[in-house]
Image (cartoon, rainbow, N blue to C red; front, side):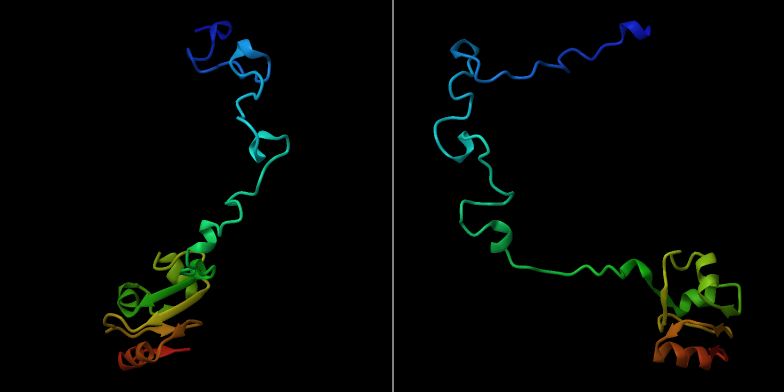
Length: 143
């Protein structure tokens, strides 16, 4: 292959349609715009979703749902996840390094799900009542 022989694939490029250039072109006179109406005129346009004054679809349909922007920054940790960790002193950094929570997580909460048998110390983490009771029952503490 030579640089001077490179060309587009057959049929990939085509000439721009020349409208309004006489009857012989097939697109003379009205230039493919039809007769009369807003779309036939220069500068005739309407905003996206406009339906001629009829109530547009996006306003006819009910609003539903909500997507919180805080979601990527929240994380929940189960007691069973704490059980698997090799360290006794657990904070946000330890959880991120172990891959239990994402690197983006800021608001971390320990929830009472699963069993905890070993003694752990939590530092700087939010804990539910049930989780706190389970941690203290196992001999751990929440700071």
